Image (cartoon, rainbow, N blue to C red; front, side, top):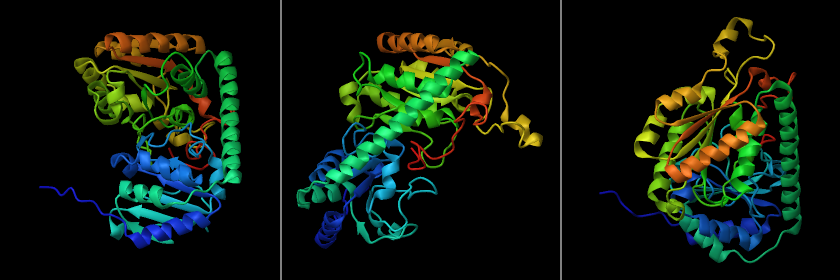
Length: 401
């Protein structure tokens, strides 16, 4: 029988952590998958609010710190280099190259339930063996109250700069979409954001997921999580192509049955943004969705190519490896699997298709694939800037969401 025992951090370690955090000017907590698994979201919020500590959520499941909180740094990438103390909590796979852009001289605390992993690939000022929830509860209890107005101002300014950059990309995307009669990924992501969070739908209702070589980078900029378990980042850390829809079937089953943090939202639709490459791996999951009445809205960015398509002809001998047949009708394939299908090429068509698809999911438990027709040239920074920007998500080379 498996043990239910959990490692509790020592009193001495907690005291040292409190001292390091209290002396820092710009501390930040990186809340990883372990915070979600151990249901540590309430003590995480309490600890952060005690001393105005910034928080970044990371991992394949996100939302254990709300993206709209004043202390959230998940969309404030330009502020992260200013942090003078980072506290990793529940980050089981420590950051791969490019996942975080922190100052190399930053002081670091890491909390992990397995002592052998501490310090293995990231130098630490303090390593703590402990359960994530137990550590955060102790931290919230022991931290003295403190405000950091300058740190809050820097986070807010960085968030505004990031939002402006994303809006600039959206404006370009609208221009490109109207000029080519094809949907740019920035438009797909922003219009999905507005539909889910700025309309009649409760912003906390819909569990979302995203992936794909190019559309995933725009999806990561615009999809939000306001409560635990609301966002699935299927390409997390290793950027696998293909599991997006499959992972959302699992999340959709949890919502359908009202399991765990999904209980208040039982029966709601789920939504995933993926690519033509991604849907090629997991299209048949729509058969599962139809069979078990799991209402999924699958938005497919169809640009006729892998996101690694070489603009111009930098790799002429391998060009054919990056191209698909043009205008493949994934929507018709979805119909053959028992789901609904929509084919769109313009922003107006996409808005209407999204509205119809969500209504069908909410009222009838029906799944839909929205085939968003694009062109491979949108990947080119020369022809359609910014093209496929390859810096880590959610932008600026800060965090690989």
